[in-house]
Image 1 (spheres, rainbow, N blue to C red):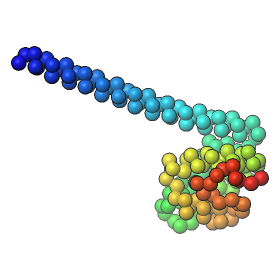
Image 2: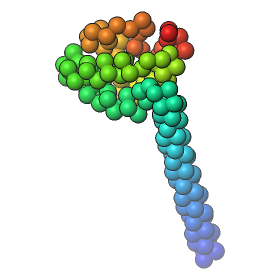
Image 3: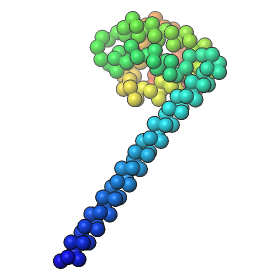
Image 4: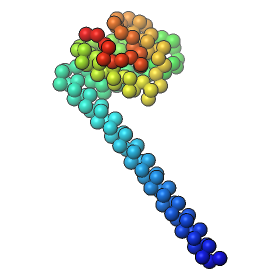
Length: 146
């Protein structure tokens, strides 16, 4: 009986140890993923600043007033501050390389933010911005014209 209690104790301690290692591994993977996202943003920032265009971080910050509209909350029309920010971003993206980099930035941010694709497609028209491509989270960013 005493041997059986010791075996149960050892078994529970081994299981607890494995659970702790599993949680540690999950935290490590999450930290690695977060680090990769930060490095990716920094890389895009450096790439854009080399050509004096708007950066991903700048664009994300500027779009904050658009988040409620893009998520589908509130008014069916974007606010004036959202349209102003969107116009600033589109005017600041002066090269094909930068427009494509911002496209990739927004594609990565869209699922995190919870962007409603119908709303993102309507944004340029509702803000009187002329684009030769759809503002769609599923767009192939390399297809964005000059």
